[in-house]
Length: 466
Image (cartoon, rainbow, N blue to C red):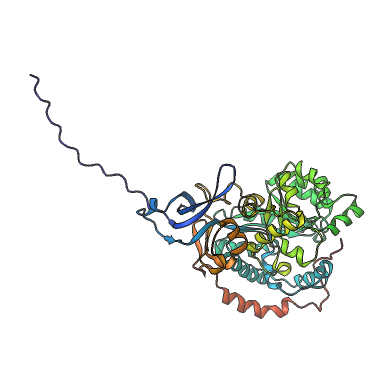
């Protein structure tokens, strides 16, 4: 008989290491997600776990019930969307909101906007940027592409308020080489600032205000320094016709022959893009994108709009935008999303285009790509930066919900955004702004408006003559 083996003493029960608390958990919501073919879907009773400013996981509400977190948001009855991106604006121009109404484009520029902009001080720009950022945060915008003057002030506001931005110092050729040099210096000085939330671009104003020589020099600088270019081009059909008559090329043709299309370029508006321009855009060696801001086109009674369908067919991303509030009267990208869908249906004569899901795709991944952040934001998925918004759909105007995508695009409003989060930081919670003091900005801006809006001096920063 074999003697029994000596019994080993029982080991003390091993404790599993406690999981590190999450920085933020958003739970109980419906989450907009993209599948591997970028089709939009919705996960119900879900949760988003955020660590170190990034999305750690998208899971079920039940799975995070016991998970510790520094902050939790109960988002029952709400939808989590990727933060909206305003792909082209002039944020400080909120100070000019309503100042130049019911005017043709040429009078709008020459009689009001450019005379007033000759008065701008850096403080005016800062206050305008503060008001604009507050407006955008409240409307669920987490990032914006800005193209204006005194942009050091805008960069400081972005760093303080917590938003994400692609910033460029605008210049005209009438400023001489110094304008182009200042645009480059700004881009290099602020690239990667605000813990990486600020990216930068070179910002020539447009082919009708910047010479071919300056555009070619800008393209060289962009390639040498790895910078994108953000500019207006083919804004309307009149500009395209004038460019053909004066230069023998459309504005897009000018961008091609000066090398701008060999860089990563964000083109604002493009309602004057022609069928002949499409091969140039398709063959561009850089990353080419267009930003559409339909409300302004309707206000100016432009006969055409951004050819979203044709651009999609050649692989050019189209992001949503508002332009500045001096022309658009608001920085509401939610409205731009709905209008883009409606205007495209009317233009194409096809109610099946642009669908609500397509509009949401333009508002998320397409817009992220347009501003060069396609690998960083634009979807709620592990590894992406935690830029998201929570939208309350419990109001009477959003009920009942038969088609969630249609409810979001055509029934919900920017005022339904309850919470805005950038890089995992809550910038607005339950409609309360946490990083900006709006009453103080409004008081000081009101005091400065008489000097800012004075036009008796006869100056203007530029002349609009296309």
